[in-house]
Image (cartoon, rainbow, N blue to C red):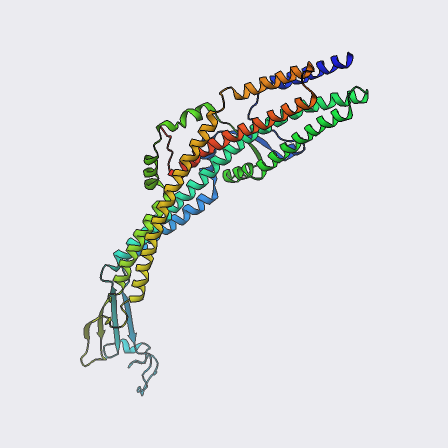
Length: 452
């Protein structure tokens, strides 16, 4: 009788603490790693995005590359520089008096600069015709546009990774909190069984069973903690690029999230069209086609010879003194009309068009798959009642009462406990996948589909 009363009082007291505690999203840091954490920061998704845009070096580096590409547009618009050529005699072998180097009648150097000396001046200017300068500037501008869209696509991908890490970390910490609460309760049970075992009131089989339950919980918790630290938590901290040693605790209002992400107003055909218009990687492909077309025009213009205008002044080296002349130089395009480069540019245009078509198919499939994924997860999520978590806790409390009344065996009670652990972690995982699926749809469309 004393043995039965002990078990009843012990189980009830330990599980009352367990059943009355409510889950939250606070980060649980193992005791052996507390010294590694300088600070714990609660952070919302909006704050995380703002911090990311301010401090991420990948974005800053890529932005400098975009600006550098745009600077080439100015260079492409510049005219060719004119050239100036000046010639004067430096040696006269026929001089009989004075120096033969830089000769002069009066014995001074640079004497041939006088009116009887030889001076030749030439100036020329290369003019690009057939719109080469304009066509080159247009091609360079389109290259800059491609770089800008690639930058936008990089930002889209990094923001998507940030949001997914935020959501994974949020629900991962909820499950981690659940494990900590269960482990604390099972530790109390193990301690009670060990005390009774020492007194001979509990069997080795029973104490081994509860020890195995505790070990299973601790092992599962370690796996989850390691997974969070090596994946979501690590990547999240890297994306925020905070030089301080901090531990981030995401905070999320699930009610607001559920209210915003309403699929009843989302039409598949509409979001597919939005994706074809908004995806920066598709814009880059479109612009790449435009660039390839501009490159063809530029190569055709390059096949047209440029014109060199030239002026000449010769003081004493021509058939008359102070000769002034003008010349025009035009290469005769007989053999080299830039045929190879023109053909190559046309093939590159065909390649860009085929790649664009392929990318359009990929975009449509991405949106369709995300849409279908959300519908499946929505159906699965709707299969859970609103009070699923509290109902399951009440069920576990009922199992506790029945165990205390000897209506449940230890094995049945442990099975119920493991079922609770498995169901709640799966419940958090499903909500994680559902929230991530909404962000994935926004990512594949290239804009916030649910923004009001």
